[in-house]
Amino acid sequence: CDRGFATILLRDRNEAPYYNGVTELKIDENPQVGENVGDRLVVQDYDHGQVCQPKQVCDVQRHHTWELSKCSTCVDKKCTTLENCDGIFNIDVTSGQLSVSTIGAATLNREFRKKYHLGVRATDSGVIQERQSLENRDPTLYVEFSVTVTIEDINEPAILERAYFVIDEET
Image (cartoon, rainbow, N blue to C red):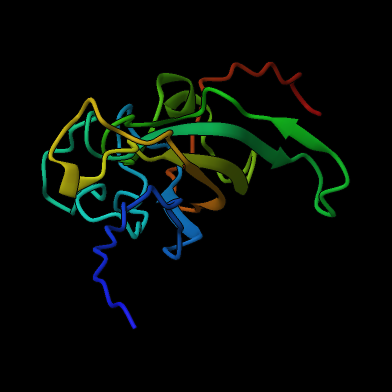
């Protein structure tokens, strides 16, 4: 009986990222332009080196990229009618940090809309760290998930506007 040896090399492949982080964020009404909405979003990935860790400078060549795929808000209490709210929030393409846009700073008011439903997409780089190459990458994969932003009510001062009244004598 003949015997032989074989060496089998396994090639790592790119796996899709997944999200198991917060799905509800809060921000006070009347925010400033660029104000952060919660902590930055972070996905998990089985591929070592693709996740940009908190407080790490993220690199689009190696780490995930981020985008908002949709934004909707309820117009009525029963949420039978949805309104598109694109442009109210921004997401940093490299870090996943949600923030308030210029439009959002002018419109985010609890008395107007209470909740915003965001669709978020995180796309991995396809880089496999063991190959030690940015050129020899697999196709990119992504995860999509939803995040709800609740606008918190703050105590706002009353607004008194100057008024002029004329009252007839003896009325």
